[in-house]
Length: 247
Ligand code: MHO
Image (cartoon, rainbow, N blue to C red):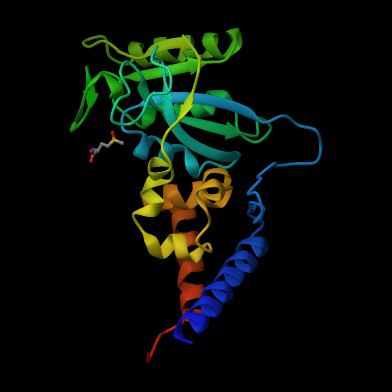
């Protein structure tokens, strides 16, 4: 009985979130299959891959940007086939960003890349020490390689007293990381996971909303967006958050 009412309450909440998000014009992932195919106008989705330290934070750094459709984490840049978190060999932890190039440009993603880590650090980022945390821009084609190269020169030009360690290399195989590493920041806040209806791992991976909330959970949304999401959550909590009084 208690479990039934809990289930009802949770799906009620889910519906509220869907309503609130739809009203704001935010893009929603399909509940079934979780497809977040953005538009029916034939526009292509572009993909960018970056390594900039722990992929938990890297994923959150890109998730709130307007035009980002989905994010996921994985391993790239090494030679080992099918790397795993505990045995990733020469791979780097990476984030894969799928985006609508009509809404956000590769150049802007590069700006976020540079601003989200310290590319002058050698063999790690902050407390995370090791080759897996190296800084890499994985490019897809000559245009991206050129833009990446120019942005690196610009970055180096800001200060010549230390070297930018960032490598630029063509993206090869990208191996998706284990489910527990996907949307890690969001999963640290089970309340938020519940708020969007306890999506399956697959759905979490493909959901635009989950990518945004993952960034929100890590405090990596722009201030205005952060406030907007917070007040929406407060509103939902006030209106309909179920309080279990007895069992
Ligand atoms: N500082 C993190 C690194 C994890 S990462 C996904 C830790 O707590 O181990 O490599």
